[in-house]
Image 1 (spheres, rainbow, N blue to C red):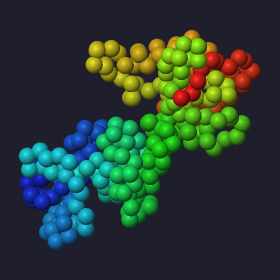
Image 2 (image 1 turned 180 degrees about the horizontal axis):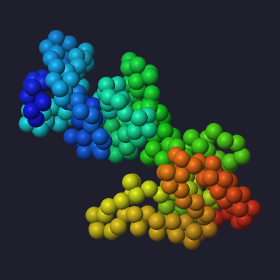
Image 3 (image 1 turned 120 degrees about the vertical axis):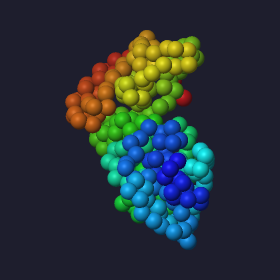
Length: 256
C-alpha cells in the first residue's frame, strides 16, 4: 500500500507482485513494478520501479489505493522486467492458464510486440497448455516423449471410460492407447492439502491409480525430480512398460 501511494493514483501494479496479490504462488523480487501512462513522471525508489507504457493494463482488482493488473499482463511483465528461470516462467504460464485466471487468447495478445527473447518461456508454457499439459512436469513429459522415436502415439489429460460399464475411470496425465499404459506425474506440490470434504488430496491421488489397474491399464508413476534430473531412467522404464503392454491384452477402455 505504501508503494502504491508513492507510485501515484494512476499507477498499476504488475509483475510477480501483482500475481502474488491475485493468489498466484510466486516469489516476488525486491522491486515492485508499477505501470504509468506515457506522460507519467518516473521517479526512483529502492523498493519499486515505475515504467511508462503506451497501453495501460486492465485493472482487475483494487485494494484501497492499490490497482492490480490482469494476470495475463502481470505474467508477461514478470517475464520482461524481472529475473526468473525459464522453468519458473513456464510453470507460471501453465498454472495461470490451468486455473482459468487468463485465457490462451489473452496471454497471446499480451505477448504481441514484446521481444521474443523476453517472453519465450511464457510462449512455451502457452504452447504446452494448448497441447494438453496442465503443469510444468506434464510439459516436460510431452517434450521427452515427443522428441524420441519408438513410442506409440500419446494423448494427455483425456478421459478413460470403461467399455463394459460406461463408467468414468480417470484422466491420466498421459496415455498410450496402443499399449494400454498410463503415466501419472506424482507431485505433492500439485496434489497436497485437503479438499472441501477434508480428504487428503495426496492420498486420493495415489489411490486413484488402483482404478486404472482394476480395468487392466498399466500405470507408471514418475516424480518431477526424475523427469528433470534423470529422464533416461524414466524413458527406459516407460519403454519396458509399453513393450509389456503391447504384448499383452489391451484393456477394455475408451478414450474420450
